[in-house]
Amino acid sequence: MKGLRKDSATWLDADENSAGQRIDNLLVRVLKGVPRPHIHRLVRTGQVRVNSGRVDATYRVREGDRIRIPPVRTSQERPVPAEHGRRSELLESRILYEDESLLVLDKPAGMAVHGGSGISRGVIEEMRRSRPTLKFLELVHRLDRDTSGVLMLAKKRAALVALHASIRAGEVEKIYTLLVLGHLPLGRREVDAPLEKFLLAGGDRRVKVGQGGQASRTIFNALRAVGAHTLVEARLLTGRTHQIRVHAAYLGHPIAGDDKYGDFAVNKELVKRGLKRMFLHASRLRVAHPSTRVPLSFEAPLPSDLTACIARFSSESREG
Image (cartoon, rainbow, N blue to C red; front, side, top):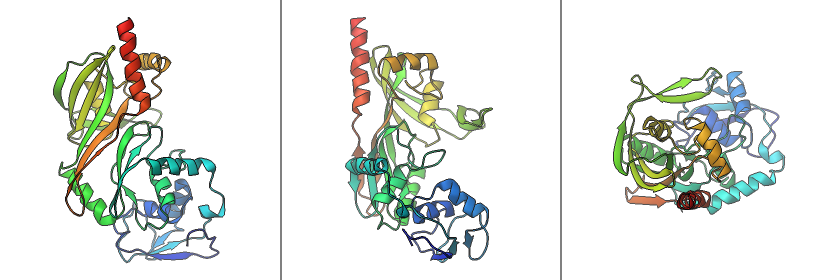
């Protein structure tokens, strides 16, 4: 059905690769190029039906479900902007590993992992476009838009389920490299502080340390001073939203360039000195293969913009 304009509804029978997937995510994959807000509107207004009944966007598809998709114009009816072609080529060039179950890439900073909130397409949409024959492709985990580094995608439903089980069991090791403001004492320390989400007056989502929050643990290892700041490795023992960012701020040493939990005055000065984004990079990831259980290790080198800042800040300190 891709690339066609239907004058009548299309019926889709959900197979085992679709089972467990949210209906909105399934439709994003099937209706390539249709904006997510439009898909949500189709579901909300009852134009999308499952087994002849209405569902909401969070409905989890079951194998054998019969899904009614209304007439809709898909992306292949109009030319793909050159910008999207370049982004797909960029992502293809940053693939670290790929087999029949798993795809791992080095996500560039500035690219969201998925579309939404004014972003037409993120990493997952671009990869689906570049792999049109794949029946299944989903994010295993997420990185913030400004965070670069190792990102896993599953090419099979069974692989996604297995990887999520490994994450819940604490069997996936994620190591991040960050620069924090000020001189954090060198060595290892663990932050065990629960995190809870809240909304600002304007509706923006934030996270804070709070006793009513979810258990959250991060191990920080301060490596060396970089001028007035400290280069740090962080290992996630839990995987909460903005966990490293909030725990670093909780220590009194927020991440350089963090526009949500950082020191805005210092960040403004850092921009003038060449740091154009948050200094946070997913540098290493270790996991057992979802099918074979063979140990895998992936590493993404620190990007050139961040290594340049380290050199510049260190040089400025020596000159001062």
